Length: 482
Image (cartoon, rainbow, N blue to C red; front, side):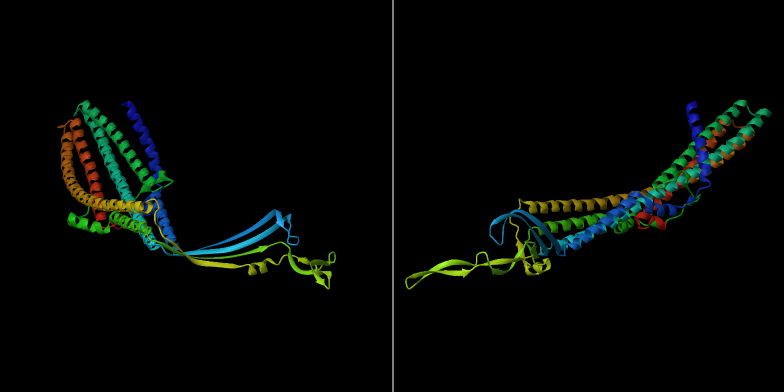
Protein backbone atom coordinates (compact mmCIF):
# COMPACT_ATOMS: atom_id res chain seq x y z
CA UNK A 1 0.00 0.00 0.00
CA UNK A 2 2.81 2.55 0.74
CA UNK A 3 4.28 1.79 -2.68
CA UNK A 4 0.94 2.55 -4.35
CA UNK A 5 0.68 5.79 -2.41
CA UNK A 6 4.15 6.82 -3.49
CA UNK A 7 3.31 6.13 -7.14
CA UNK A 8 0.13 8.16 -6.89
CA UNK A 9 2.04 11.04 -5.31
CA UNK A 10 4.54 10.96 -8.18
CA UNK A 11 1.69 10.99 -10.70
CA UNK A 12 0.07 13.85 -8.80
CA UNK A 13 3.24 15.94 -8.88
CA UNK A 14 3.79 15.19 -12.58
CA UNK A 15 0.20 16.05 -13.43
CA UNK A 16 0.43 19.28 -11.44
CA UNK A 17 3.45 20.35 -13.47
CA UNK A 18 1.73 19.51 -16.73
CA UNK A 19 -1.48 21.26 -15.71
CA UNK A 20 0.47 24.42 -14.90
CA UNK A 21 1.77 24.46 -18.49
CA UNK A 22 -1.73 23.71 -19.80
CA UNK A 23 -2.97 26.92 -18.20
CA UNK A 24 -0.99 28.96 -20.69
CA UNK A 25 -1.82 26.85 -23.74
CA UNK A 26 -4.50 27.39 -26.36
CA UNK A 27 -7.81 25.83 -25.43
CA UNK A 28 -9.65 24.02 -28.19
CA UNK A 29 -13.37 23.93 -28.84
CA UNK A 30 -15.14 20.81 -30.10
CA UNK A 31 -15.61 22.42 -33.51
CA UNK A 32 -11.89 23.21 -33.76
CA UNK A 33 -10.96 19.67 -32.76
CA UNK A 34 -13.24 18.11 -35.37
CA UNK A 35 -12.06 20.44 -38.15
CA UNK A 36 -8.41 19.87 -37.29
CA UNK A 37 -8.86 16.10 -37.17
CA UNK A 38 -10.56 16.05 -40.57
CA UNK A 39 -7.60 17.96 -42.00
CA UNK A 40 -4.69 16.22 -40.30
CA UNK A 41 -5.82 12.71 -39.39
CA UNK A 42 -3.75 10.06 -41.20
CA UNK A 43 -6.73 7.80 -41.93
CA UNK A 44 -8.59 10.71 -43.54
CA UNK A 45 -5.54 11.57 -45.62
CA UNK A 46 -5.23 7.96 -46.80
CA UNK A 47 -8.91 7.91 -47.82
CA UNK A 48 -8.35 11.17 -49.71
CA UNK A 49 -5.43 9.54 -51.56
CA UNK A 50 -7.67 6.60 -52.44
CA UNK A 51 -10.10 9.08 -53.98
CA UNK A 52 -7.30 10.62 -56.05
CA UNK A 53 -6.34 7.13 -57.24
CA UNK A 54 -9.95 6.51 -58.31
CA UNK A 55 -9.88 9.75 -60.31
CA UNK A 56 -6.76 8.53 -62.11
CA UNK A 57 -8.53 5.24 -62.92
CA UNK A 58 -11.38 7.23 -64.47
CA UNK A 59 -8.82 9.09 -66.58
CA UNK A 60 -7.44 5.70 -67.69
CA UNK A 61 -10.94 4.63 -68.74
CA UNK A 62 -11.32 7.78 -70.85
CA UNK A 63 -7.91 7.11 -72.41
CA UNK A 64 -9.09 3.69 -73.63
CA UNK A 65 -11.22 5.50 -76.24
CA UNK A 66 -8.21 7.28 -77.71
CA UNK A 67 -5.98 5.78 -80.42
CA UNK A 68 -2.50 4.61 -79.53
CA UNK A 69 0.31 6.36 -81.38
CA UNK A 70 3.99 5.45 -81.23
CA UNK A 71 7.06 6.54 -83.14
CA UNK A 72 10.20 4.50 -83.73
CA UNK A 73 13.64 5.17 -85.08
CA UNK A 74 16.66 3.00 -85.82
CA UNK A 75 20.25 3.65 -86.87
CA UNK A 76 22.54 0.70 -87.52
CA UNK A 77 26.14 0.01 -88.52
CA UNK A 78 26.76 -3.06 -90.66
CA UNK A 79 30.42 -4.13 -90.46
CA UNK A 80 31.65 -7.09 -92.50
CA UNK A 81 31.16 -8.60 -95.96
CA UNK A 82 28.99 -6.39 -98.11
CA UNK A 83 28.60 -6.21 -101.89
CA UNK A 84 30.63 -3.52 -103.59
CA UNK A 85 28.26 -1.62 -105.86
CA UNK A 86 31.00 -1.06 -108.46
CA UNK A 87 32.55 -4.51 -108.66
CA UNK A 88 29.65 -6.60 -107.41
CA UNK A 89 32.13 -8.45 -105.20
CA UNK A 90 31.82 -9.03 -101.45
CA UNK A 91 34.21 -6.86 -99.53
CA UNK A 92 34.80 -6.02 -95.87
CA UNK A 93 33.28 -2.59 -95.37
CA UNK A 94 31.09 -0.60 -93.01
CA UNK A 95 27.68 0.64 -94.03
CA UNK A 96 25.12 2.70 -92.12
CA UNK A 97 21.36 2.76 -92.37
CA UNK A 98 18.64 4.85 -90.73
CA UNK A 99 14.97 4.00 -90.56
CA UNK A 100 12.01 5.73 -88.95
CA UNK A 101 8.35 4.95 -88.59
CA UNK A 102 5.05 5.94 -87.03
CA UNK A 103 2.41 3.42 -85.89
CA UNK A 104 -1.14 4.02 -84.78
CA UNK A 105 -4.06 1.80 -83.85
CA UNK A 106 -7.56 2.36 -82.53
CA UNK A 107 -10.11 -0.07 -81.15
CA UNK A 108 -13.32 0.23 -83.11
CA UNK A 109 -15.30 -2.43 -81.29
CA UNK A 110 -14.48 -4.72 -78.37
CA UNK A 111 -17.82 -5.80 -76.98
CA UNK A 112 -18.46 -2.37 -75.38
CA UNK A 113 -15.76 -3.14 -72.81
CA UNK A 114 -14.44 0.43 -72.92
CA UNK A 115 -17.90 1.78 -72.13
CA UNK A 116 -18.29 -0.63 -69.22
CA UNK A 117 -14.83 0.21 -67.91
CA UNK A 118 -15.61 3.92 -68.00
CA UNK A 119 -18.87 3.43 -66.13
CA UNK A 120 -17.08 1.26 -63.60
CA UNK A 121 -14.39 3.90 -63.07
CA UNK A 122 -17.05 6.52 -62.36
CA UNK A 123 -18.70 4.20 -59.82
CA UNK A 124 -15.31 3.47 -58.24
CA UNK A 125 -14.69 7.20 -57.83
CA UNK A 126 -18.13 7.61 -56.24
CA UNK A 127 -17.45 4.71 -53.87
CA UNK A 128 -14.14 6.32 -52.86
CA UNK A 129 -15.97 9.55 -52.10
CA UNK A 130 -18.39 7.62 -49.89
CA UNK A 131 -15.52 5.90 -48.09
CA UNK A 132 -13.86 9.26 -47.48
CA UNK A 133 -17.15 10.60 -46.06
CA UNK A 134 -17.48 7.57 -43.80
CA UNK A 135 -13.94 8.00 -42.54
CA UNK A 136 -14.66 11.64 -41.73
CA UNK A 137 -17.85 10.63 -39.94
CA UNK A 138 -16.01 8.03 -37.88
CA UNK A 139 -13.25 10.47 -36.97
CA UNK A 140 -15.83 13.12 -36.01
CA UNK A 141 -17.60 10.67 -33.69
CA UNK A 142 -14.31 9.55 -32.14
CA UNK A 143 -13.25 13.15 -31.56
CA UNK A 144 -16.62 14.05 -30.04
CA UNK A 145 -16.47 11.04 -27.72
CA UNK A 146 -12.90 11.86 -26.64
CA UNK A 147 -13.83 15.52 -26.15
CA UNK A 148 -16.80 14.65 -23.95
CA UNK A 149 -14.59 12.28 -21.98
CA UNK A 150 -12.31 15.22 -21.17
CA UNK A 151 -15.29 17.29 -20.02
CA UNK A 152 -16.43 14.44 -17.77
CA UNK A 153 -12.95 14.07 -16.28
CA UNK A 154 -12.82 17.80 -15.65
CA UNK A 155 -16.14 17.73 -13.81
CA UNK A 156 -15.06 14.64 -11.90
CA UNK A 157 -11.85 16.42 -10.91
CA UNK A 158 -13.87 19.36 -9.59
CA UNK A 159 -16.06 16.97 -7.59
CA UNK A 160 -13.04 15.24 -6.07
CA UNK A 161 -11.42 18.58 -5.29
CA UNK A 162 -14.60 19.77 -3.64
CA UNK A 163 -14.77 16.59 -1.57
CA UNK A 164 -11.17 17.09 -0.47
CA UNK A 165 -11.88 20.69 0.51
CA UNK A 166 -14.93 19.63 2.53
CA UNK A 167 -12.96 16.91 4.30
CA UNK A 168 -10.18 19.37 5.08
CA UNK A 169 -12.77 21.60 6.71
CA UNK A 170 -14.15 18.61 8.58
CA UNK A 171 -10.62 17.76 9.70
CA UNK A 172 -10.10 21.24 11.10
CA UNK A 173 -13.53 21.14 12.73
CA UNK A 174 -12.78 17.73 14.25
CA UNK A 175 -9.53 18.98 15.74
CA UNK A 176 -11.45 21.73 17.52
CA UNK A 177 -14.05 19.24 18.75
CA UNK A 178 -11.36 16.85 19.99
CA UNK A 179 -9.63 19.64 21.86
CA UNK A 180 -12.97 20.63 23.32
CA UNK A 181 -13.62 17.02 24.31
CA UNK A 182 -16.81 16.81 22.24
CA UNK A 183 -15.72 13.85 20.12
CA UNK A 184 -13.19 11.09 20.68
CA UNK A 185 -9.76 11.23 19.05
CA UNK A 186 -10.68 8.19 16.94
CA UNK A 187 -13.11 10.31 14.93
CA UNK A 188 -10.29 12.70 14.06
CA UNK A 189 -8.13 9.81 12.92
CA UNK A 190 -10.98 8.58 10.73
CA UNK A 191 -11.30 12.04 9.14
CA UNK A 192 -7.53 12.23 8.56
CA UNK A 193 -7.57 8.80 6.88
CA UNK A 194 -10.46 9.97 4.70
CA UNK A 195 -8.46 13.08 3.71
CA UNK A 196 -5.51 10.89 2.69
CA UNK A 197 -7.82 8.71 0.61
CA UNK A 198 -9.31 11.84 -0.99
CA UNK A 199 -5.83 13.00 -1.98
CA UNK A 200 -5.19 9.68 -3.67
CA UNK A 201 -8.56 9.83 -5.46
CA UNK A 202 -7.81 13.38 -6.57
CA UNK A 203 -4.45 12.28 -7.99
CA UNK A 204 -6.18 9.49 -9.92
CA UNK A 205 -8.76 11.96 -11.26
CA UNK A 206 -6.01 14.35 -12.36
CA UNK A 207 -4.17 11.51 -14.07
CA UNK A 208 -7.36 10.38 -15.84
CA UNK A 209 -7.89 13.92 -17.11
CA UNK A 210 -4.33 14.08 -18.37
CA UNK A 211 -4.62 10.74 -20.17
CA UNK A 212 -7.91 11.77 -21.83
CA UNK A 213 -6.32 15.01 -23.04
CA UNK A 214 -3.33 13.19 -24.45
CA UNK A 215 -5.63 10.66 -26.16
CA UNK A 216 -7.53 13.41 -27.98
CA UNK A 217 -4.33 15.28 -28.83
CA UNK A 218 -2.87 12.14 -30.40
CA UNK A 219 -6.13 11.53 -32.26
CA UNK A 220 -5.66 15.02 -33.74
CA UNK A 221 -2.04 14.17 -34.66
CA UNK A 222 -0.74 17.08 -32.59
CA UNK A 223 3.01 17.15 -32.12
CA UNK A 224 2.91 19.36 -29.03
CA UNK A 225 0.32 17.17 -27.32
CA UNK A 226 1.63 17.87 -23.81
CA UNK A 227 0.29 21.43 -23.92
CA UNK A 228 -3.10 20.45 -25.32
CA UNK A 229 -6.25 21.53 -23.49
CA UNK A 230 -9.93 22.08 -24.22
CA UNK A 231 -12.31 24.89 -23.45
CA UNK A 232 -14.05 24.51 -20.10
CA UNK A 233 -17.48 24.43 -21.71
CA UNK A 234 -20.63 23.13 -20.12
CA UNK A 235 -22.89 21.03 -22.32
CA UNK A 236 -26.31 21.03 -20.68
CA UNK A 237 -28.68 18.17 -21.18
CA UNK A 238 -31.25 19.25 -23.75
CA UNK A 239 -34.22 17.57 -25.30
CA UNK A 240 -33.54 16.37 -28.83
CA UNK A 241 -36.25 16.49 -31.47
CA UNK A 242 -34.73 13.37 -33.01
CA UNK A 243 -35.55 11.36 -29.89
CA UNK A 244 -39.23 12.13 -30.49
CA UNK A 245 -39.04 10.15 -33.74
CA UNK A 246 -39.65 6.41 -33.81
CA UNK A 247 -36.66 4.11 -34.40
CA UNK A 248 -38.33 2.91 -37.61
CA UNK A 249 -38.41 6.50 -38.92
CA UNK A 250 -34.79 7.03 -37.96
CA UNK A 251 -33.83 3.79 -39.70
CA UNK A 252 -35.63 4.74 -42.92
CA UNK A 253 -33.87 8.10 -42.88
CA UNK A 254 -30.54 6.43 -42.14
CA UNK A 255 -30.91 4.10 -45.15
CA UNK A 256 -31.03 7.19 -47.36
CA UNK A 257 -28.34 9.18 -45.55
CA UNK A 258 -25.73 6.79 -44.21
CA UNK A 259 -22.70 6.20 -46.40
CA UNK A 260 -22.36 2.57 -45.27
CA UNK A 261 -25.40 1.69 -47.39
CA UNK A 262 -24.19 3.88 -50.25
CA UNK A 263 -20.80 2.16 -50.21
CA UNK A 264 -22.41 -1.30 -50.25
CA UNK A 265 -24.71 -0.26 -53.10
CA UNK A 266 -21.78 1.19 -55.05
CA UNK A 267 -19.85 -2.06 -54.56
CA UNK A 268 -22.87 -3.96 -55.90
CA UNK A 269 -22.98 -1.72 -58.98
CA UNK A 270 -19.24 -2.23 -59.45
CA UNK A 271 -19.72 -5.98 -59.36
CA UNK A 272 -22.42 -5.65 -62.04
CA UNK A 273 -20.03 -3.70 -64.24
CA UNK A 274 -17.36 -6.36 -63.71
CA UNK A 275 -19.76 -8.97 -65.09
CA UNK A 276 -20.34 -6.84 -68.19
CA UNK A 277 -16.60 -6.34 -68.67
CA UNK A 278 -15.94 -10.06 -68.30
CA UNK A 279 -18.68 -10.95 -70.82
CA UNK A 280 -17.22 -8.47 -73.32
CA UNK A 281 -14.29 -10.86 -73.72
CA UNK A 282 -16.65 -13.19 -75.62
CA UNK A 283 -17.10 -10.58 -78.37
CA UNK A 284 -14.80 -10.15 -81.38
CA UNK A 285 -12.45 -7.20 -81.43
CA UNK A 286 -12.11 -4.92 -84.44
CA UNK A 287 -9.12 -2.62 -84.66
CA UNK A 288 -7.95 -0.15 -87.24
CA UNK A 289 -4.23 0.42 -87.80
CA UNK A 290 -1.96 2.71 -89.77
CA UNK A 291 1.82 2.75 -90.09
CA UNK A 292 4.30 4.99 -91.88
CA UNK A 293 7.95 4.10 -92.49
CA UNK A 294 10.95 5.41 -94.38
CA UNK A 295 14.68 4.77 -94.55
CA UNK A 296 18.03 6.21 -95.58
CA UNK A 297 21.48 4.77 -96.37
CA UNK A 298 24.89 6.36 -96.00
CA UNK A 299 26.74 4.42 -98.79
CA UNK A 300 28.20 5.87 -102.03
CA UNK A 301 25.94 5.74 -105.09
CA UNK A 302 26.42 5.64 -108.89
CA UNK A 303 25.75 9.05 -110.33
CA UNK A 304 26.73 8.32 -113.97
CA UNK A 305 29.08 6.49 -116.38
CA UNK A 306 32.23 7.40 -118.29
CA UNK A 307 34.36 5.59 -120.95
CA UNK A 308 36.75 3.08 -119.51
CA UNK A 309 40.13 4.25 -120.77
CA UNK A 310 41.88 1.24 -119.32
CA UNK A 311 39.66 -1.17 -121.26
CA UNK A 312 37.90 0.86 -123.97
CA UNK A 313 36.08 -2.01 -125.70
CA UNK A 314 35.00 -5.55 -125.23
CA UNK A 315 34.05 -8.30 -127.74
CA UNK A 316 30.43 -9.20 -127.61
CA UNK A 317 30.37 -11.54 -130.62
CA UNK A 318 31.55 -12.17 -134.23
CA UNK A 319 30.15 -11.69 -137.69
CA UNK A 320 31.04 -13.41 -141.01
CA UNK A 321 31.43 -11.04 -143.91
CA UNK A 322 32.37 -12.60 -147.29
CA UNK A 323 34.11 -15.41 -145.60
CA UNK A 324 35.95 -13.19 -143.18
CA UNK A 325 35.24 -13.20 -139.45
CA UNK A 326 35.08 -9.91 -137.64
CA UNK A 327 34.68 -9.22 -133.87
CA UNK A 328 31.74 -7.19 -132.72
CA UNK A 329 32.94 -4.64 -130.24
CA UNK A 330 31.14 -2.40 -127.78
CA UNK A 331 32.55 0.46 -125.76
CA UNK A 332 33.19 -0.16 -122.10
CA UNK A 333 32.02 2.30 -119.46
CA UNK A 334 32.72 2.51 -115.80
CA UNK A 335 30.44 3.98 -113.13
CA UNK A 336 31.04 7.38 -111.68
CA UNK A 337 30.59 7.29 -107.86
CA UNK A 338 29.17 10.10 -105.82
CA UNK A 339 28.35 10.64 -102.16
CA UNK A 340 25.10 9.47 -100.63
CA UNK A 341 21.96 11.50 -101.24
CA UNK A 342 20.81 13.74 -98.42
CA UNK A 343 18.94 11.98 -95.64
CA UNK A 344 15.91 14.24 -96.16
CA UNK A 345 15.68 13.37 -99.85
CA UNK A 346 16.02 9.67 -99.10
CA UNK A 347 13.28 9.86 -96.45
CA UNK A 348 10.97 11.45 -99.00
CA UNK A 349 11.79 8.97 -101.77
CA UNK A 350 11.68 5.85 -99.56
CA UNK A 351 8.53 6.59 -97.55
CA UNK A 352 5.74 4.04 -97.37
CA UNK A 353 2.27 3.70 -95.80
CA UNK A 354 0.30 0.78 -94.51
CA UNK A 355 -3.21 0.76 -93.13
CA UNK A 356 -6.05 -1.68 -92.65
CA UNK A 357 -8.40 -3.44 -90.26
CA UNK A 358 -7.74 -6.33 -87.93
CA UNK A 359 -10.50 -8.59 -86.66
CA UNK A 360 -9.84 -10.90 -83.71
CA UNK A 361 -12.44 -13.55 -82.90
CA UNK A 362 -12.00 -15.44 -79.60
CA UNK A 363 -12.52 -19.16 -80.07
CA UNK A 364 -10.76 -20.93 -77.23
CA UNK A 365 -8.54 -19.46 -74.53
CA UNK A 366 -8.43 -22.19 -71.93
CA UNK A 367 -11.79 -21.22 -70.35
CA UNK A 368 -10.23 -17.96 -69.20
CA UNK A 369 -13.13 -15.76 -70.32
CA UNK A 370 -15.78 -18.13 -69.00
CA UNK A 371 -14.06 -18.41 -65.62
CA UNK A 372 -13.70 -14.63 -65.44
CA UNK A 373 -17.46 -14.31 -65.91
CA UNK A 374 -18.11 -16.93 -63.25
CA UNK A 375 -15.83 -15.18 -60.78
CA UNK A 376 -17.52 -11.85 -61.52
CA UNK A 377 -20.94 -13.38 -60.85
CA UNK A 378 -19.76 -14.78 -57.53
CA UNK A 379 -18.39 -11.36 -56.59
CA UNK A 380 -21.78 -9.87 -57.49
CA UNK A 381 -23.57 -12.32 -55.21
CA UNK A 382 -21.12 -11.52 -52.43
CA UNK A 383 -21.74 -7.79 -52.92
CA UNK A 384 -25.49 -8.41 -52.79
CA UNK A 385 -25.25 -10.32 -49.50
CA UNK A 386 -22.96 -7.59 -48.16
CA UNK A 387 -25.59 -4.97 -49.00
CA UNK A 388 -28.24 -7.04 -47.21
CA UNK A 389 -25.92 -7.39 -44.23
CA UNK A 390 -25.22 -3.65 -44.13
CA UNK A 391 -28.96 -2.97 -44.04
CA UNK A 392 -29.40 -5.42 -41.17
CA UNK A 393 -26.39 -3.98 -39.33
CA UNK A 394 -27.66 -0.43 -39.80
CA UNK A 395 -31.11 -1.40 -38.53
CA UNK A 396 -29.58 -3.08 -35.48
CA UNK A 397 -27.28 -0.12 -34.80
CA UNK A 398 -30.12 2.39 -35.10
CA UNK A 399 -32.41 0.49 -32.75
CA UNK A 400 -29.49 -0.13 -30.38
CA UNK A 401 -28.49 3.55 -30.41
CA UNK A 402 -32.09 4.65 -29.85
CA UNK A 403 -32.53 2.18 -26.99
CA UNK A 404 -29.18 3.15 -25.44
CA UNK A 405 -30.06 6.84 -25.62
CA UNK A 406 -33.40 6.28 -23.87
CA UNK A 407 -31.71 4.11 -21.26
CA UNK A 408 -29.04 6.76 -20.78
CA UNK A 409 -31.75 9.37 -20.25
CA UNK A 410 -33.38 7.24 -17.57
CA UNK A 411 -30.00 6.68 -15.97
CA UNK A 412 -29.37 10.42 -15.99
CA UNK A 413 -32.74 11.21 -14.47
CA UNK A 414 -32.16 8.58 -11.79
CA UNK A 415 -28.71 10.04 -11.14
CA UNK A 416 -30.25 13.51 -10.68
CA UNK A 417 -32.65 12.12 -8.11
CA UNK A 418 -29.84 10.23 -6.40
CA UNK A 419 -27.68 13.35 -6.13
CA UNK A 420 -30.51 15.31 -4.59
CA UNK A 421 -31.21 12.55 -2.07
CA UNK A 422 -27.53 11.96 -1.26
CA UNK A 423 -27.03 15.70 -0.91
CA UNK A 424 -29.80 15.97 1.64
CA UNK A 425 -28.50 12.91 3.46
CA UNK A 426 -24.98 14.35 3.61
CA UNK A 427 -26.33 17.69 4.81
CA UNK A 428 -28.27 15.94 7.56
CA UNK A 429 -25.23 13.84 8.50
CA UNK A 430 -23.07 16.95 8.71
CA UNK A 431 -25.53 18.63 11.04
CA UNK A 432 -25.61 15.54 13.29
CA UNK A 433 -21.80 15.34 13.27
CA UNK A 434 -21.46 18.98 14.25
CA UNK A 435 -23.61 18.41 17.36
CA UNK A 436 -21.88 15.14 18.23
CA UNK A 437 -24.70 12.79 17.26
CA UNK A 438 -22.70 11.02 14.51
CA UNK A 439 -19.15 9.77 14.40
CA UNK A 440 -16.63 10.67 11.70
CA UNK A 441 -16.78 7.28 10.03
CA UNK A 442 -20.52 7.51 9.37
CA UNK A 443 -20.09 11.09 8.17
CA UNK A 444 -17.36 9.95 5.78
CA UNK A 445 -19.62 7.22 4.43
CA UNK A 446 -22.41 9.72 3.81
CA UNK A 447 -20.01 12.08 2.05
CA UNK A 448 -18.53 9.29 -0.08
CA UNK A 449 -22.00 8.25 -1.21
CA UNK A 450 -22.79 11.86 -2.09
CA UNK A 451 -19.57 12.33 -4.06
CA UNK A 452 -20.06 9.03 -5.87
CA UNK A 453 -23.57 10.13 -6.79
CA UNK A 454 -22.20 13.40 -8.19
CA UNK A 455 -19.57 11.53 -10.22
CA UNK A 456 -22.22 9.12 -11.51
CA UNK A 457 -24.43 12.08 -12.49
CA UNK A 458 -21.57 13.63 -14.46
CA UNK A 459 -20.83 10.31 -16.17
CA UNK A 460 -24.52 9.73 -16.97
CA UNK A 461 -24.81 13.26 -18.32
CA UNK A 462 -22.03 12.98 -20.89
CA UNK A 463 -22.95 9.41 -21.72
CA UNK A 464 -26.46 10.57 -22.58
CA UNK A 465 -25.20 13.57 -24.59
CA UNK A 466 -22.94 11.35 -26.69
CA UNK A 467 -25.58 8.68 -27.28
CA UNK A 468 -28.08 11.30 -28.39
CA UNK A 469 -25.46 12.60 -30.82
CA UNK A 470 -25.11 9.09 -32.22
CA UNK A 471 -28.88 8.88 -32.80
CA UNK A 472 -28.88 12.31 -34.46
CA UNK A 473 -25.91 11.16 -36.51
CA UNK A 474 -27.93 8.24 -37.90
CA UNK A 475 -30.79 10.66 -38.57
CA UNK A 476 -28.51 12.59 -40.90
CA UNK A 477 -27.40 15.44 -38.62
CA UNK A 478 -23.61 15.83 -38.89
CA UNK A 479 -21.55 16.25 -35.75
CA UNK A 480 -20.55 19.72 -36.97
CA UNK A 481 -24.19 20.84 -36.85
CA UNK A 482 -25.06 19.31 -33.50
